[in-house]
Structure formats: structure tokens, C-alpha cells
Length: 213
Ligand SMILES: [Zn+2]
Image 1 (cartoon, rainbow, N blue to C red):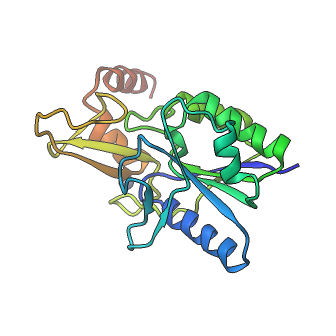
Image 2 (cartoon, rainbow, N blue to C red):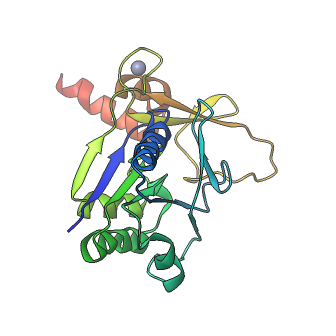
């Protein structure tokens, strides 16, 4: 039977480019592929867009609690050679389990691309926990996401009005307060230095480190 693969990277790590390249190679070989993403990813609406201007239409734009195991969705993917999932961190736990059943009972390979952690440095969602638990293969996508210091980026830090923060909801919706949000890929050392160091948790742990050093 087919496998379910999870390919992750930090932001700007080439996930979208990777998914578009995969789609392109299936297309060149006249193999049908299906692209799935969550409706929660509003960037590009029903397209996926890479930063270098490439784009592809999404075949299934999944609602929050929509099942992939409906007759309607099955009609879209049952002849596909692969299912490509963009921003998989936005899918819920049961949607991840459904993808696993599709790979293992319907025999269609499922390639999922996404983030593993959020701006707080924690697992992004219960969907991501689920995919870590059951994916047949888990791969980090290259190391194309670099921190400002040149080291490999691990964290997706959030800036709110140009200041780093590790407080707030996972997904920011325009709340009319005119706050500006930006994400910055950072290595562990820079994340600690710029984002965490002011927090109670970091002060406590840094104190313990100082005591024992
Ligand atoms: Zn750094």
C-alpha cells in the first residue's frame, strides 16, 4: 500500500516551491495529482502561490470540519497518483487520520507539506501531533530557511507591530485593531535572544542554568 509522508520546514523553507515542483513532475509524466489545502489558509484563496510567482489551482479546499472521505471528494482524488497537501498544519486531527486511511486503504500516496511548530516554539496544532504520530515517513525539507545570523532557521517567530512576541493565538485574523504581523525565521539562539529572553519562563530557566554553571 501507499505511504503518507510529512515534509516540514520553518517558514520560507521552500515548502510551496517543493509542492509545486512535485506537481510539475507528475504533470510532465501525465500522472494525475490532486492538491488539497485548508480554507483557513486564505493566502491565494483557491490557489497555492510560491514566493517566486509560481501558482497552482487547489482541487479540494477543505472546510474546517469537512471530511475527505465523502463520495464527492473521492470522485476528485480516486484516480490520482498522488495527493499533495499544502499547509498541512491547518488540518484537524481527523482529517490527518483520513489522509492516512486514503494512503493505506485506497492506495494513493499522500505527501503533506507544512510547519511543525508555531511562533511560540510549540507543536503547531493537534493535526501536526497526529501526523508526527502516524506518518510513514517524516522528512525535513533541506535547510533553505536561514536565520538572519546565517544559521539554519528552526523557529517561526512572530512580530506584532515590529516587536517579537510569543503571546497570542496561533492564527491571527484581522481583528480591526490595525496591528501589523510579520513572521521571521530564526535559529534557536536568535529565538532565545530576541523572543524568549524577556519571558517569565525563560528568566526562570536561565536562572537555573546560571546556578548550576
Ligand atoms: Zn540566528
